[in-house]
Length: 466
Image (cartoon, rainbow, N blue to C red; front, side, top):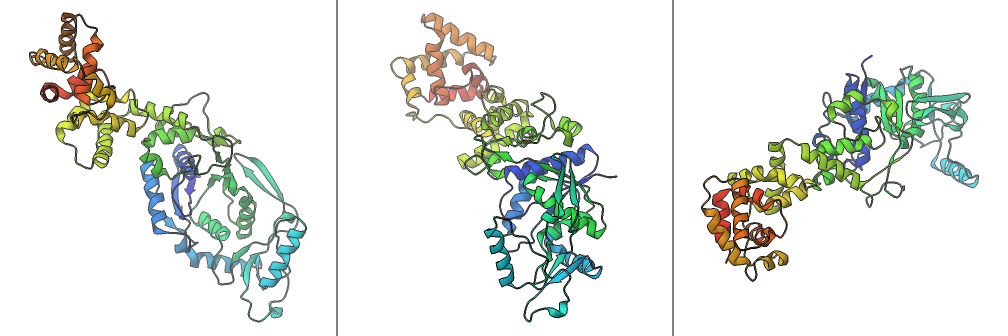
């Protein structure tokens, strides 16, 4: 059997973090078993579904580098197929027309509320003759569900889930206007797409028994279900925007790398021993449903930052510089020159050891793009150039101008010699130099900065100090 999984979001908003994890688990399971990962846009709710949301979901998956097999499927395109499937059950006597009036349904709902129960249709049209139908009522099509026994969902995460059939009513397949319901469309689509494993959040667990009944009514193979516990906020409450229930694009804009977010989401509810930092290749090799826990997991931004820092440190140098350039082009509102790119590349190692996000990294890299503007807006840096600070910068510039072989070693030797000649501690010269070269009082090693800037740019910046 070829494993086929699917990610089936409703395009009523962005791809949130819980949906991204669901997509990841489906993608990993399919790739682990050499199967297929499909994308289905469940857009049958035309009033709430938007093209913008579809575009955001697709863009989010692509940014996360979760590639799907074949073309994306739109559920709304299969409406006629869904209708025909319901008519098939009707013809076989496995479904029936229900002519309940709105008033009758309201009465059932109020009766259930008075009894402290959930609304259940009482089956009053299950065996009635349609000839008794009231005038002016468009019937719905309901599944003739089993009324005795138990429906069992053998869930690969939650374990066997048993539901008494007396607790389930005859669900609607087609509404009075002839449109298919979500529950019905999902089953037909999963069958037609050959889905073998339905991996989704455990908020769908209550749907699984009903869908199992519908698969059985059609005589179709029932897919394997795996319902994943939801993600909670750090306080253990249901994840909300205040916790970080944001769109995937928000995490991108906050400076997280797709590989880092995948690693973090993988460990958010799944484990492989004590391993925390897991490459994509390892994840594909190791992932299986027996590693998914049953308890809700909690968002931890400190942990996410730690994982992201690891991936920043390990990222391909040129690719990371390209990402920095992309951020700076937007934040500075101007293209970055090839010379500036070269300086960022030369100084990258010192920058990325301190950064937890791409935003931090790009902000730190500005020193290699823009020269300081005087007077300095950084008050601490400005104070470093007061008193004898400017004179020390001028003397340093004279000493540095004599260096032929420009390197961290030769730069350090020249600056330390100058400090010794004035009987000064090294920092007394290094700090004014840092202010003059970067406009800041904090940066990577000043020798590293000067090497990355190059002799020409270093001298130009030092000589520009008023």
